[in-house]
Amino acid sequence: MRKIIFLVISLITLAAGLQAQPPVEDKTQLEKERQEIQKEIKEIQDLQNKVKGQKKQIVGQYNLIKRKIELQNRYIANINKELRFIDDDIYLSNVEIFRLGRQLDTLKAQYARSVVYAYKNRSTYDFLNFIFSANSFNDAIKRVAYLKSYRSFREQQVNTIKETQAKLAKRKDEQLGKKKKKDVTLQHQTEQVKVLDVQKKEKDEILTSLKSKEKELEKQLAVKKKRDRDLQNAIAAIVRRVIDAEKKKAADEAARNPKPVIPATPGAVTPNIKTKPSSEKTNVVFNSEADLKLNASFETNKNKLPWPVDQGYVCTHFGSYQIENTKIKGDNAGITICTQQPGVNVKTVFDGEVVAVFNVGDTKAVMVRHGKYFTVYSNLSGTSTSKGSNVKTGQVIGKVAADEDDGEGGKLEFVLMIENKNVNPEPWLRR
Image (cartoon, rainbow, N blue to C red; front, side, top):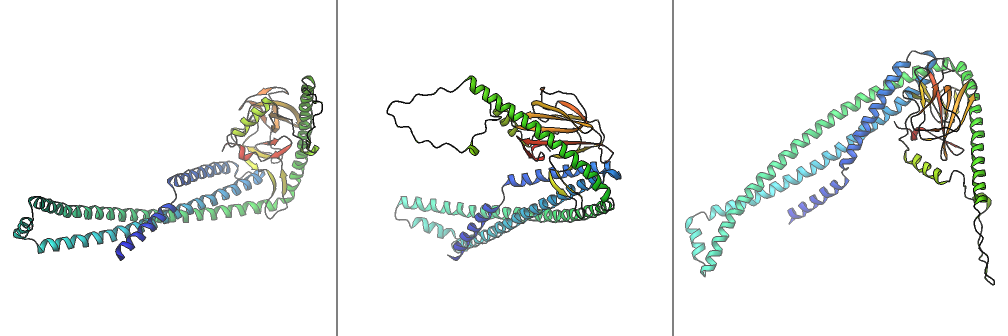
């Protein structure tokens, strides 16, 4: 009875463990994520090799090494998840090996008892006596069938024992493989932690260099801040004009096609309809049939939009930023993309209409409307489009201008807006 209870408990434990085991898809996703991280780390390393030693690209180098450290931490976290999966597999294998061992012991004990019984009743006389002592012919036939079944049962016992022994041996071999895999993964984890330490030292060296040039960089940043303000003021003015034009278009359409007024029925009670406050009125801007279709199409392509340049990297991310241990800080309305050299083609990220081509200092900018979404491509040395033009995804609209701050390479300011609100473009762009 105790053996049965123990077996039931073991089976329940195994079932609970199997439920806790991560599905195969999670492991596949883990491997996919690791490959993506490795690919991006390699891309960043290639970019680092190209700008390494360029004194005027020191801020770009800092942003690259910072991003690489973030990715390296994610990579190590990914390895840690894999180790947890391996530990879970080893635990479940231990449970299964223990269960099979107990099952094998039980089968062997049952078989031993049957062998002892057969030994005690081994003479032909005993078997014949068992058959001929039957009360009737039918009873004798049943006893013969019973003896055949008993012989078959013993053969089945032997086969079951062999099968269980084979399963147990296979499980033990698999367990050894899992333990070896864990050892390899632990070694890989140690190597990646060492790589992270090297990257942190590299970042410290770059920070030391930045610290020595802090005043010079602050002056460059002040110039950039002024250009950013000019760009934002120009964008805000253009968006206001576009919104006003859309409102006027909607008003003219309403005037041409007024809604019919239904006359009140004499004696009818007018229902008490509460009107929304003016602050809650529905915004009719960019809600035409064409705009709604374009809005939905743009949103569907989140994380799939192509980069506005073929080769480049984000040297300043969206939003407020500060380089650690320095006074160098700022606030980016979009993302700044650095290229190896000026003159690189700038391409639209989605279908739309060019609503403005304007100057920002000595360079140009292009603004494209995609329904309620706007994209801005600034710091262009030249443009190949004009206001009112319809553009397609990937269409060349200009060239990247030189990086005025660092004096080497090119720099593109890329802004994404939802109506008049700036949003981070990076989650929208394809990696």
